[in-house]
Length: 474
Ligand code: MN
Image: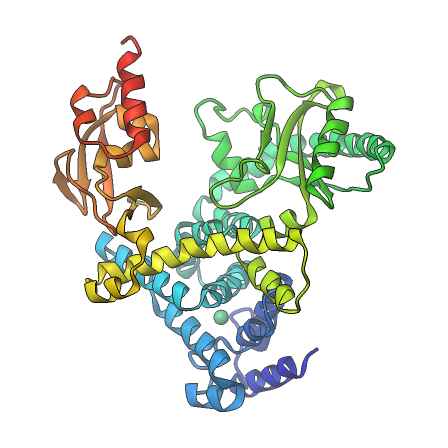
């Protein structure tokens, strides 16, 4: 335990003297749990200390001045940021309020990303202890978690955090579906576990021949993610069509070993031709996720999924952007090496996404001078448009609702029959602006795109999809 940690702990204990959580436990348990989560994500010492102190102004007896005096400006600013973000009600009653609040969130995030990560740790512990709150509060908090915090964690590449937040919110939002799915999936999970254990034994033996010493573990699919998948029309609630109920995760040291391990897997279990291999190491997902996924005919001919990645990639897929602070810390201790450079670079890339949003915020408050002062190129030709659910689509300047529709889904483009921006009907050639909320109205039946659209669309994707749609016979 560092001196800073001890000092923050004792400060928090004093600030929250006599306070209890809804569970009846002393308030400090929430603060220690939040700090522990941040430490587990490998956040820096300041963030962990701020985790202990994060409620000391809002709910405790401390002031901002006390924090500056005792802990210095950085930690005080983190706590102040968390307090301010906590005041943002992301469940606004109107769409405008919601978007405005989302912007405030992004702004806080951009000033110091650690503020949002501390807020996520706070929310995670609150969700883990949600059962102690009165019923009317549970539903509101669960909905906000599902609609705002889980997607935010996803955007920051924190896959494990996103999955846990969703799983914790699920039973409060859809209690009946949750109970049904728990009962329905239990036997399938059990059987999948059995197959996975057998596959693990065989793979360890085969990989030993290749001089690999991988870490292999089964990972059960998050239940909310399973729920979403079962609701897809092509799955139609048939759990036998889900091949990654329990996936095998193979962790090795280097990228080369990932491909060697892939070879070893395919030597024992044949890949399923129609499902095959997804190489997210060669082609990472937009949120930076890297791994090789292969679906193979496993024990008893049952299809199983094997995920292969390096330990570093694994760490990043679990903790996402939080890993940046970890790598930055390692780097400052001047540990060199190509691998580290690559990791730090990948993390910095994600941060630039956050910075763009920050600049978008500055743009939408109409601070043109500020924008010109920044000379932020990326934003002069990119815009960020929101779906009605608050998802952000990144488009080139000049993009229209048709570009937006094709960016969401090719079918949404083909079936577009009208568009609303910020709640008002607009023509299809309307030029979208950053911060617009765009809703595309759809025909009931599938249909072909209109040739006229080619005259005004701005994205290559939309052009391509329209031409494709026109070529397909009706
Ligand atoms: Mn809290």
